[in-house]
Picture 1 (cartoon, rainbow, N blue to C red):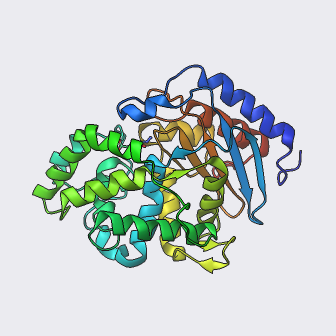
Picture 2 (tube, rainbow, N blue to C red):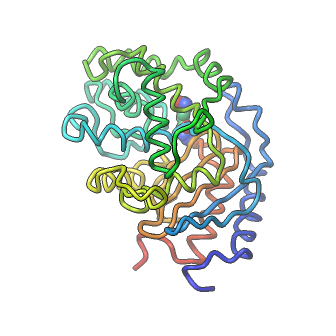
Picture 3 (cartoon, rainbow, N blue to C red):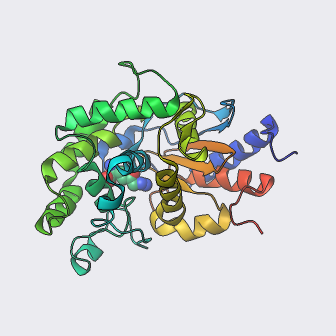
Length: 314
Ligand code: DON
């Protein structure tokens, strides 16, 4: 096995490990619509720097980005607010669950990092103009540019059912936003929350997500669109935060087992980047206790071990 080739057999081996691991969990149900996902669906897509895709499993099943959207929203906001943003959100791992409120009181409403829910809401509050629908249109445009696509109505469509489901049940996130408003960390909590719920409800399949993630692996240039989409310094910050905070209170285990910057979402997505080499998108809606895809974790562990992909390799 040469390190630069994703042999079909290796992806199938990873997929088998993913399918096995998926039996140990279940889809998220605190956003009721997510509970309808098929826990047996597992897919993996690897995109190399030439844009070539290597896939296995159910890679055309659509799912919502959920927290994977946070890395792209952050990249977007850093393009214009790089200095300002860090006054309102820190860059430390939290060690807490993704929706935890506990540290906000101790830290005067300033979230530990932009990848936990509180920090992501701060980012959404600054995402483009003010109207959530316009913001999401512009955000979709950004996702298209990052993927090397021209924008169309079909690009990254919003799953209205998931959006409405989260609108009906997202009281914890509303509490985070209202609490941060008290400290002037968030300016318009209602609009920030609506933007955040919308960005979380944008849909992709694993192949599209792998193509989208390539911009992060490439340092902010879109290899597929041939243009710079994220300033290199901002991209480096986003990727560093993925490595430190992307899997919440499971990030240490993930660093030891896999060793790649990554971001998970409760829909069952995990996007991992191998800097300068690959973007890897995993899908499997069966989640473990920390809200991360069990199949995704297992598949990334196989690939990392077999191809020595860990950025911590010595
Ligand atoms: O805010 C929420 O709870 C969801 N929209 C996103 C959370 C999420 O994806 C956490 N990641 N594993």
